[in-house]
Amino acid sequence: MLTSGLGLLMALLGGAIWADLKPIYWTIETLTWLLSAITTVLPRSITGPLVLILGAGLLLWGQSRSFGSIQQALAPDKDTVLVDALRAKSKLNRGPNIVAIGGGTGLATLLSGLKRYSSRITAIVTVADDGGSSGILRRELGVQPPGDIRNCLAALSTEEPLLTRLFQYRFSAGSGLEGHSFGNLFLSALTAITGNLETAITASSRVLAVQGQVVPATNVDVRLWAELENGQRIEGESAIGKAPSPIVRMGCLPEKPPALPRALEAIANADLILLGPGSLYTSLLPNLLVPELVTAIERSNSPKLYICNLMTQPGETDGLDVGGHLRAIEAQLASLGIGKRLFSSVLAQDDMEPSPLIEYYRARGAEPVLCDEEALESLGYEVMQAPLQGGRPTATLRHDPRSLSLAIMRFYRKQKRDL
Picture 1: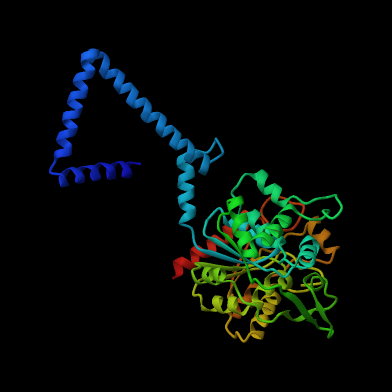
Picture 2: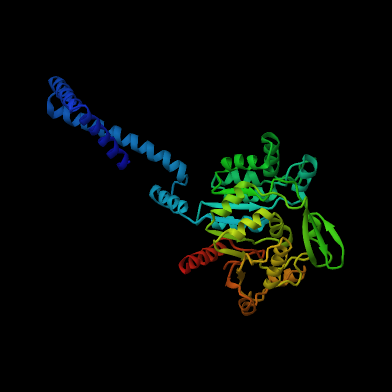
């Protein structure tokens, strides 16, 4: 406001100088005549205070309306001071360019924490899901699966919580509706209207006031396949998640799907590239089946961090420690002819204390993902361990958004200092 006022004053002064000071003379003459006319009606002792009060009132009224509009836009919560909201907004706009690659609930958890540190976030999401509501819509409507994208949009939303809850609402009854989420139906309808999922995501982002952007890994309808250690070949993301034997190799049909230009541009401009957390074979590696994405990551000189899961997943990562997860990623990259190690830094969970919750998971075939820090560092990895599940007791063993994002930002700041 001060800058605008000063600019207006200078513009008027420049115009007056250009016009040989005549406008200033005319203005002074007009003001002299106006003041003389007013003071002939009422004495100066009454006119002066009245005009002063009227001018100040108009000024305060206009500014309060302006500040009210800004407050409503930036800080709908009445307890939030506008200056604090403006400062927070400015801080987010100066945050690092972060690219997060993955899918499933793991990526959504990561995004909900990262949006506290930056508004320049790009989520690159796998579109290989073929189970649940997404799978039904994919088969019946021929659209790309919207489920993981919906979760990411909701995680990055800054809109009213009620609207986000509506987007995540899942119908529990109704013939044909049961099991579907409103957001999946919304995205599928927008895809049919606009002609492609990318445009539908852009429109949904405006509705939810998304902080950042969500981009599909590819706009091609891909189907995953996996070769198992027992020689069996299985197809479909939902089947791979329940593989009866360890997975040896993965691929997709069609082979070498193209990446979206927005995803490639985001990677090229990234200050930090993240992979995970999420299901190794069904959420993370499908993104690395897009050769253009892998090439873009390889070309980037930005810090790259792999975030490992807390627990193994029965039928998918049985018996794998952090090193086993990294070997699977490197094997996938090697199949694309990438000999260079892309993710040489890894963030893993601290050793967890025994608890009834861990025993509950063990009874269902899951184990904590162990991290042999010394062995990994001897192989050239930079290992960072932190309490990623948070300090509060929870009903599930999952990453805590705040703890996870705090550990990531510590890694980023350290990398910045070391440059």
